[in-house]
Length: 134
Image (cartoon, rainbow, N blue to C red):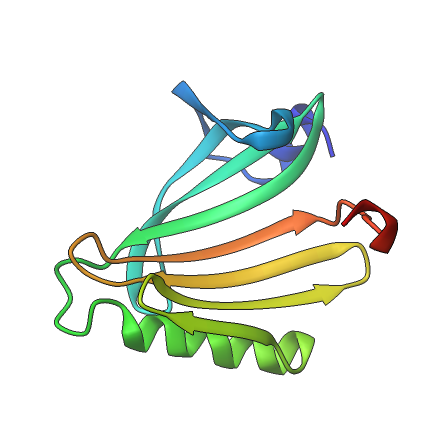
């Protein structure tokens, strides 16, 4: 999907004044006003590679929440399990992470603990790497 089609499908988007750049040449060009997902409020950013939408990212600051976003992360996990099945998960001092692959999509939920607690939900197009590229 290109930017014109995305603007038509998601009215209310605004161009990002200082686009975020990710590895692989992805650029976060468009953003929606903060929305609530899983009980936390955050921004949705739409990343493009070339002229195509490649990634949608929701990021919420959970540092003001007593649980640091733990409940929100739990809701995202349950949604992911209902939608995509069992996850691949990791938990360590740097946070919690759960990922799914479905068709041509890669989806993940992430929680980073205090002092800068965040909750993240990302949907991106699969890069299609095989074992020879590891």
